[in-house]
Length: 281
Image 1 (cartoon, helix red, strand yellow):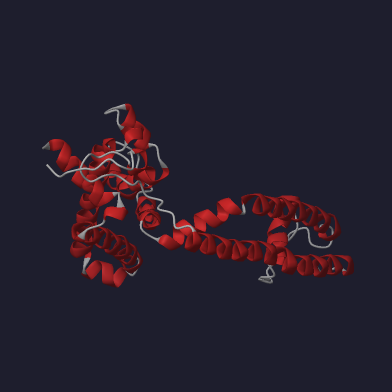
Image 2: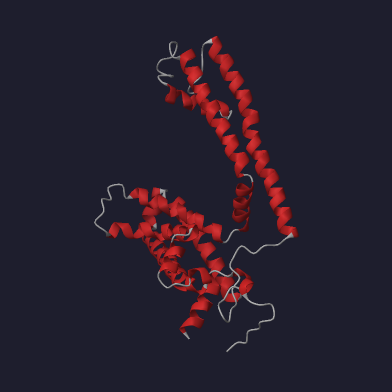
């Protein structure tokens, strides 16, 4: 009886290909709760509204933390349904160290810190961790999963582009420091400070708070701005082509990223013989 209940909980929370009405309701409710918490954090920053409805904000926050805590406990408890997490102790520890499980833990753990003896002089910073609940959407959002596939597909090209950007940034900051330091010692006091100008110029943002005034510095700034236009367009093109390739591949060869588990025996479907059947007890 306990094993069947554990499998049922696992299927509701994890195995989306066996999705039934309860599973869909659970998923949509958690998505709604995550988005609502994000909106609540934004509204709480408006002091007039927060002071008026402070009690309701606190109640909603505690309710959300309770739901996320229960969800995490149920996921850890039912994860032994999967073969790779079958061991009641080490299997659960392995599951708790997975990226999604760590994100689930971060979503509610900061709430319990004020009840410890920790130094919470910066307690407001813990409120910012509620925004990390948005990362939980990666479990439910197909778009975020596709983005992860694209980054893995183009990781070598993106890393190469990042190396070029870092090299160009350090080189430009070093050059502009030697060119502008004597003319503007307060604006370009050292190379690390000059990197701010390099970043703003490479990205073609141009805040105008720091800029070269010498002829050689202006020439260097113009060259760097032109290089930045092409350089930052390169990763955008790589990601766009990666999206096209991944989406096309998913249409031709549909893949199920979630574990496929038999709702009756609890074993992965890929490991079962083709001729094996299961009868509901």
